[in-house]
Length: 493
Image 1: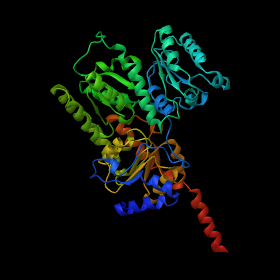
Image 2 (image 1 turned 135 degrees about the vertical axis):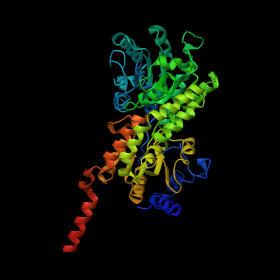
Image 3 (image 1 turned 90 degrees about the vertical axis):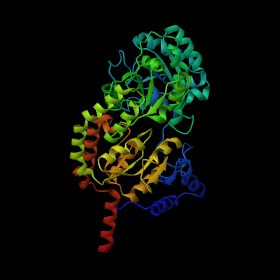
Image 4 (image 1 turned 120 degrees about the horizontal axis):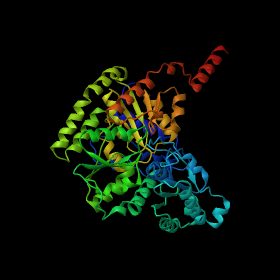
């Protein structure tokens, strides 16, 4: 299908909005836009980070998900208590495939579920004593843990438990960091506020722990990788390139990260931010307090990798700049071979994305390296500074959608007819039943890594494997089959 013009895209948005009541239609219209690369600020075309429209299906998560599920959960040598009923901890356990090195239950705890298992009596009488008891039990059963975080669920904020007082007391008793995080799920409009709350907890309870301690030997080439959650091994693939160009990665968090690395981060010379949305707050704090500059980087696809390596190297001396060029040259044969193999099979294929964090813009270059075109993209919990970064990456007249509803997304797909959709687990089976190839782009559909040159080879293979799988010819879309049957019955009458 030919690409839509600006007028056709605008008409499509209006057509989709027609089903809503007047007030809902006005509200949702602010979150749907036609991309215009000439704009410098996205707030002239789209609204974001607002409360979801009541009565529609949103794909967002909550503040607890943003804190425990994204920022704190992957810190491997700490124990993260889901403070509240058992369900939140269970459903957020090990779902994002944050890989780590260690022995689970001994010195790493990332895939385990620690919960205070709130019951009715805890709601009535409070859970402070229960929380204190749990932390004492944890210290007895798992003595090699390096600290504890308390991830508050909704009831904690509603009944007013003083988790900060419990944390301070436990810190003195066990002699390890105990971090209270006020990330009750009802706070804010999405998981984005949970990221911010988690960043603030790191600022207030962790980063200052080594202020004034000069025992850690630094070098001019020390960097920290922040906001890479090591999904499918992504952070390891990124770290390899940084170290090959001559940098020393002192801290990597939170994927495969430790609390010691977090504490050492104020000693580095540069913070490298992968997921801007979830970690820009702490980067800005360290820039203000410790005078540490920060930049974003994008290691999806060879074009963006080379751009990022050179951008990082430009902030160091000629040794690192030469190192970056050596790394790019070293892998050129590898990625040229990947492109030569897969581009002829993927050339011209059209993709629609709807993901969280950085992916709605960061993966565009990787698709383009394979000759594919992204014709629609949007964020679950993006802010306008995310869209500011996106409008230059997308083509003119393409669809931009914020907090898209289930109905809107399905209707856009029916009209735009992409060859591939990249979104999350909630959307996966809907579109597969519609006969449309789909990749789960939150956790790589059990694959990965997708970062780095090695990750690009896996990314290309997975896109080809999905798009060109012969199974799609066998899929019978239920409602299309029903329509055909109705026509046949009517014809025979």
